[in-house]
Structure formats: structure tokens, C-alpha cells
Image 1: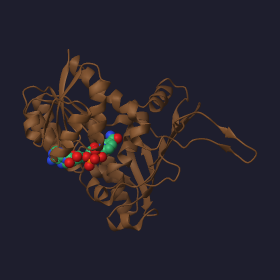
Image 2: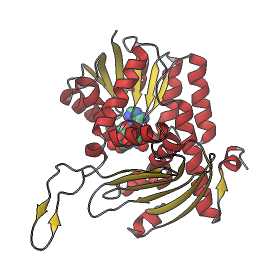
Image 3: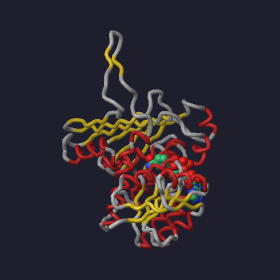
Image 4: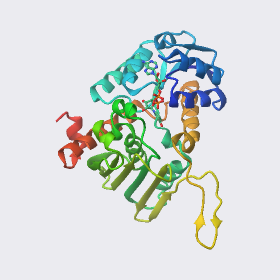
Length: 338
Ligand SMILES: NC(=O)c1ccc[n+]([C@@H]2O[C@H](COP(=O)([O-])OP(=O)(O)OC[C@H]3O[C@@H](n4cnc5c(N)ncnc54)[C@H](O)[C@@H]3O)[C@@H](O)[C@H]2O)c1
């Protein structure tokens, strides 16, 4: 059975999903793409041989030809498009974060439940080969009882200031992937303590954000974790994870474009890591889309649910409150609206 899809948002991530859906996902038929900028939609339709494009997302959502909608527009549009797509009876894939506001997320998830459609959230890193292997090691007991989790997640360079201003900030936009990774690997977090600053570019601070952050986490199962984020890394995208436990440790290294070491009298040299998320995580984007289409075609549950999209937003809100109030914050306080 094939699944017909349309994409809303022909920007960076919309084009990634378009390339996967048109070339790498069995059973997927990408029929249309929408963007408020018609030129962006037209260019994507041309580049990926998508039959139809429009500047009106509503037209795409209400098209009788589509089974599912893939929401890749800016974060502040996600809830509206989720609700409209659910009302039109379409299954939904939505990029992270669903929204920055828990009440708005709850309204979107209620609309999805009422319509009885499926919603998958774009936490692609779960499907990266390194992260899958770490998860398997933990689940198989290869490192005993996990005691600590260490995530280093540093971008090569900050996004444009215009993006930072609408993104919700580092914790909501960037660290949210690491919050998801915490839950994916070790389960629910109960408490967060954040320290952060602007050490890369004061303009980021002037835009109301941070660019360097360390976050301590306590898991419900007793394990402890840390996440380190930076918006700028001179040697490229730095993505490493270690889980340490009673029976050993499992760690993942950066991924390189080649495995060559150049040895000389002065030094050992090698290529820099794959430069950014589009290169480093491309296969994980293909896999998440393959699993989404497979779930719809086989009437199975999607692998990353609306609740999986909601909890990392709660974690980001707890992290931001911790930063503001300079104290550890329990997720329960934020969930209760205290
Ligand atoms: N999962 C990931 O790794 C990942 C990576 C990048 C971005 N994202 C998420 O994807 C979303 C888009 O990010 P991006 O980097 O592609 O941004 P982008 O700015 O490159 O693209 C967004 C596109 O959406 C379009 N758009 C905005 N409002 C619209 C509307 N009302 N109707 C139709 N189109 C509209 C814009 O014109 C633009 O072309 C964000 O929520 C971001 O957090 C996720």
C-alpha cells in the first residue's frame, strides 16, 4: 500500500524530507509541497520532481489526494497546522518542537486524539546508528545499571540572529534534541539545573538567548546526567554520548567523512567530523520518514509520539526557569504550572 504525502515548509528541513520521501522511502508518494514563499515551493517541486506546489498550506491540507501532511514550517506555525490537518483527517509528521507553550501543545494533541489520526514528531536522532547501538547496549544490560549519561552536542556555528529570535532559544530549539536523547536512552528526568552564558557572540545575548550551556539532570531511576551545548565549534559538529554504568560504559564518537590518519614526524592528522546535522544525521532523517510511512501503511503506532514531543518542551521550560532563578527545578513544578 502506498501513502500519499504533502510537505508544508520548503526550507532547510523541508528539503531534507523531500529528498528522502522522493528517493529513499518505499511506498511514499510525495505529491505536493507548500510554502508561503511560492518561489521556495516551486524550487523544491522542481528539484525533487514533486508534481504540485502551492503558496497556500490550507489547499494542501484539504487536498483529498493526500493521506498525510509533513509539517516543516517555522515552529510558531506547527500547532495551527497540526490542528487543521487533524480536522481534515490527515496523519501528521511534525518537526520539533511542537510549540513553546504547553497549553498550545495540549490543544494540538487533543485535536489529534479527537480525529483519531497519527502524529509523529521529528526527533530523528533516535534513528542514528550510534544512538541505536547505545540504546541496545543499555537495554541488553551490556553496561549493567546506568549511573551517568554525558551528552556533548555542539554546533559548528550559530544560526542567523533572525532565526534565534523566533526559535525559542537554545534550550527550546537545540538542546531539545538532547533532552529527547536523555529520555530515549535512560527514561524520564525529574529535575534540571542549568548554567549558561553568552561566550560566543554578545549579539546572541542581545537577542535574548544564550550560546553556551551546561545542564545537570536527575533521572527518575536515580541516574545523573549532563548536557553540554555550544553554538560554535571551530572543528565542526561535535556529537558524542557516553553512558556509564555498574558494568562498564558505552560511548559514541563523532562521525568522519573518511577513516584516514596522516602520520608525520610532527603529528597525527585526520579529517574534521561531518560538518553539521544535514550531513551527520541524514540517514536518520531517511529512517524516521521510512518508519512513519511504514506505520501508516501497516496501521501500526508511529515510533515517536505526541507525548514524546511534549515532554522535551517541558524539560526546556524547566531548564530556562532554572537558569532564570539560579536553582534546580523539578519538572513537576513546571508541569503543575507552579
Ligand atoms: N529535526 C531536525 O533536526 C530539525 C532541523 C532543522 C529544523 N528543524 C525544525 O524544522 C522547522 C523549520 O526549520 P528550518 O530550519 O527548515 O527553517 P527554514 O526557515 O529554513 O524553513 C522554514 C520554511 O517554512 C516556511 N514557512 C514559514 N511560515 C509558513 C507558513 N505559515 N506556511 C507555509 N510555509 C511557511 C518558510 O517560508 C520557510 O521556507 C523548525 O520548527 C525547526 O525547529 C528540525
